[in-house]
Image (tube, rainbow, N blue to C red; front, side, top):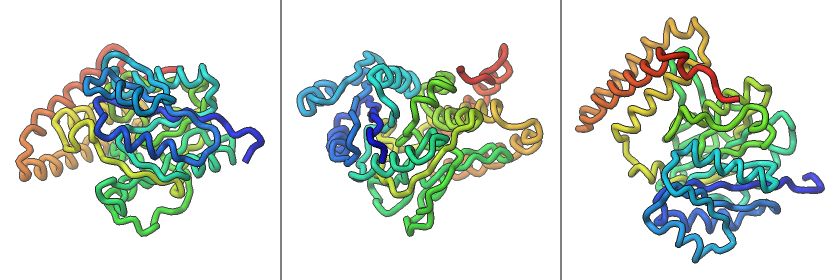
Length: 309
């Protein structure tokens, strides 16, 4: 460990998460890394979240955005806040997690070992099923147009316990170096309110020469999608379709597009049939709107093909 431990700002993004925020802040406060601060970036909560943090955790910084700026808007503001206060690294976190005390220490051990490493992520398990994986590294398949969590819904038998480079880190636990932000810019607001902004940042970092690292010895548990009720809503379906297509427009090669439309069409039909059998009829217009919105953005003036610099 270096003589001076790098300063890490742990940014907890919050929107009406008072019911789960306490556990998150308690476990973050117990982390063993010697040099970190916690800041809550609040997106205009109306459930008393800000008052709760002020009363129960007076030493924690709060950024009050006053309105819901989405994931990218709130995280970009928080990154500027952290850097202005001397942060070497920013650790973006969701508000519905429970972390192992060694989480940040394990991540930072890898972070300081190689200056080429720019973004790191933890092994993430379901809060409700503590031995079941939600994220154990990320895969981007440019032939199928799919961005997927490795190991999702598999029992954790340590099958993904090798530290290694990965295609992307998920925003639930996203540790990024200040030098990466200075070189590639902030999260792209084209992906607001949420989805794919983490994969896009990782793709830009990779193209700038940084490594993306999965660290399985760093562990946390996630109440998956608490802010959206934990279900596959039509809005989430629409955004995922729209933003994934924007991502692949930006980074896939021309020859990948010989396969991407067919794969997406086939997978969409499988998904559609499964959700209709479950009675989730709202996915039909959501899928349609997602494709239409993506087509409009991709074919519009210039399209969202260039990331921020």
